[in-house]
Amino acid sequence: MKDGIEKIPRTRFSWKAVAIVCTGAAALIAIGIWWGYSIGKSGKGEAADHDQAVDQTAKAEIWTCAMHPQIRQPRPGQCPLCAMDLVRVTEGGAGDAGPRELRLSPAARKLAEVRTALVERRTVAAKIRLAGKVEYDETSVSYITAWVPGRLNRLHVNYTGVEVQQGDPMVSIYSPELVAAQEELIQSLRAVERLKQSDVESLRRTADQTVHAVRERLRLLGLTRQQITEIETRGTVSDEIVIRAPAGGVVVEKAAVEGQYVNTGTPIYTLADLTRVWIKLDAYESDLPWLRPGQHVEFSAEAYPGETFEGEVDFIDPVLDPRTRTAKVRVNLENPGGKLKPEMFVRGVVSAEMSAVGRARAPLVIPASAPLITGKRAVVYLETEPGLYRGKEIVLGPRAGDFYVVEEGLEEGQRVVTNGNFKIDSAIQILAKPSMMNPEGGGPVPGHQHGAMEGPAAGATEARTFERFSVPPDFTDRMDRVFDSYLEIHHGLSRDSLEMAREAAETLEERLLEVDMTLLGGAAHNAWMDYLGGFRNHADMIRSAGDIAAARTAFAPLSETMYAAVKSFGTGAGKPAYLFHCSMAFDNRGADWLQSSMEVENPYWGEMMFRCGEMTEGLAPGPEGGYGEHRHD
Image (tube, rainbow, N blue to C red; front, side):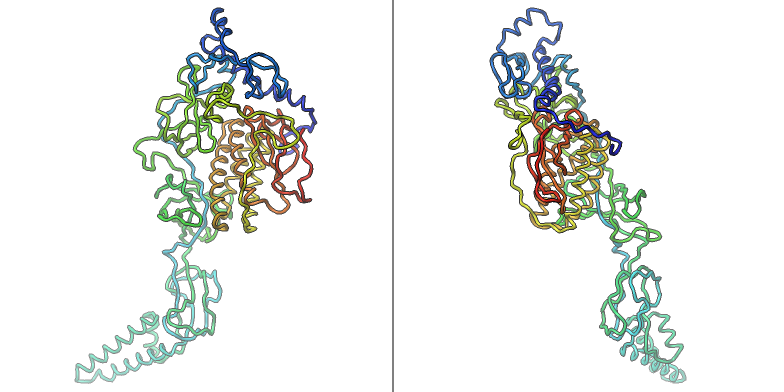
């Protein structure tokens, strides 16, 4: 028992037993949909009259295999690949259904659990997750520099981190120039005293002007008015002059040492007022359309778990960083007591509404479960009338929570399938019509070779070439944490726990924010940025999935991205990674996933077929080296 989930017994099945289980699970729905399709033309299901049944039988027939729809024969029999009985698909049974359409009877719709939703215009919100650091408020940083050349006899603040107030003594300096200016002031004051009884007005005025000029010179050399008054009152020259803090703050840099000779302008201290700080967050290019000044930001710091800070976006950098392809988003924040410290790592969330980012009216949206997405294509199934479904390729905008914005292809008021769309697509695919996985229609679709022991499974990830990058250990450590979160998602799905998968997906999103992309350069950085978009999108889909089927749908492309990332960047020392494949997943289209163990744990079927699948590639050796023997139960 682990995490409250009962461990599934590791029972070894024969190929024939597994085939029976797989067949019973996958074929039932497909056969039911085909049955509904074959009687869908009548629109009356079991109430169709006898004459219509006779006409239907008279039409040309094609017999196919539920597990291998590429098998299409003109008469009944058994599948030459798996020996299953063939089922009938009536040619011409579509009636008024077009080349991209499927008609289902009420019974078939119920079997496929078809649900629909309206295409509508509405204000949608998205949560933009950002990461960044606490930094100094640049407007509150001040410097203490040498105003005159001389020797630093004493540093009153001799280490960084000390908090000082305005006017506090900072350094004592001996400067021949200051000594000479003090002597000049004293002599000028004495001259004024001597000329007080003089009848020559011009001499008295000249003496007063000289005193004023020397005072101004001392002020320009860095002395305060109080220090100048003290010299005049004392009437003697001081060898050392104290330089005082021009503003309060914390000493964040000490650039000089006692006894050092300095020139005019030599830096001595840097002060920063930490009662107000800047939060600088990194926003990716895809996030920028959602962001604007004035938006509310909630963020947390690792130093204070469970505590939330709030602020507003004050400034968005107009220039992207060419290395990270991000723009800085700045939040100004009051920081009484200095709780937030510069260089602290923070994570922020901005809640943005699509209607607030420059659109004339609310965007056109559909539920996130409606589109079938593969690569750059997105397909939805429209319900044009009860029981009649037509495939339509569309252009999607950004995802906003539980919705996708539609840029092209749909109109307000249309109705799209939100549940059962994969089953409709599979039925259309079996009929050799254009579908998501086979956009041209006709020809065979991916087959199923369940139980094969040699070679990669049919439909497995094709061999692809990835450039392998050498990356710093810090990047590898953070990447391993991302991989660990992926494995937790796999663990949840293989044990039919949607909640566990959701929590792991949220953790994965947080760990993506911890990856320091500045550690990479050139092609490695570009590759990571490509993978990052897939990670974030599909992890978010799993985190917000309404049911475990939707989570499994998003897990497949997440696995493809993780496969590419592991091929490009590897894993930490001693951490194994293996690629597995189940060709039964998603109505026989097949899907891959990664594991750190060599014993099959199928995330697409869970307890129903826990050991269904086979290892097709070893990506990283285990701690003993090599990949060991793999087994397919």
